[in-house]
Length: 309
Length: 106
Image (cartoon, each protein chain N blue to C red):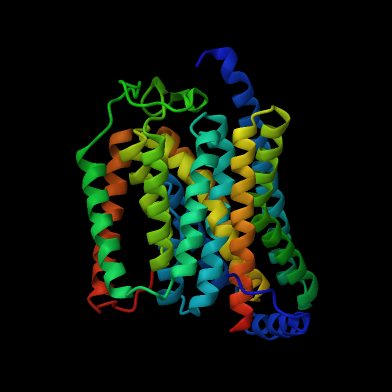
């Protein structure tokens, strides 16, 4: 059963917390602002090309190199993820890469998985969860690298539940008009639920698992998976970001340059995604998955090297 | 799916693209104005107010997007998708209340 909302005295605590926490970052040099802007720009640029959350890159950089508190870094990372999702959505929707109906359907599975993960957090052994996560990442990397989809993803007999999910788009990178149909939607929903649940349990952005899950089950072109995943990640990040915002963990002088950099990084990253060939996109994605798997594996073995994810 | 069938979908995508692009740039404008004020004045209030307003706008955009998508599906009598969008909104709201309540009780 969900706990009830806190009493009205909560508001006074909230405002005092806002003031005290934000005073710490009252003065910030121009160099620090430029540095945070560059971090947001690079992380969002890479994140939006690959359709995974920029938070995977931002949190380690902000905590290890910028020596920021983990909660401040997480707040900045969540806002950056939303900036990536919303900033990149316009060009990707106009290019026909984002499948809105599919995104809405999958969002139901991912938000439910994320919510279950939040409720179940702490009940399971974190070491075994990290091991499972690393294993899933390695399988996903292998799948992305070794099982490329055909160039034209026309359905070849898979069970199609809803023809409104079928779309065609012009792929600039591949110089071809691609038509695809969504297959095995039930399997896709189950895998997305599992990906969101596992990600939520270990506290790592689910974008890294969503794309391989969509690729394996729904048999979508990689760019459609990337664009649709990017479109969806904003919703799951919103719940977390809203909590950080209300609790006063959003430091304006830290988050503002990261968010601005993220918006610009996304605009550039999306251009890269539109013009990139599918093969290189898969290769880059598989590479990042392997690096992440090694990092998660080290954490599960107790060798975190001070790099939080 | 033929070209005629795709027209409403394209209209929905354009609408969402405009909403999200406008919202993102409006939020970025507010955040940039807040940052610029930090170089002009030592007063924290207007600077933090503008930045937080922009950040708040950015955070609310995905939820606004779900609401708009659900309403568009509802007006088009695509009840299945409208119901799914409503369910997503409900799950996000419940999750938010749960996490907030848990966070403040700690």
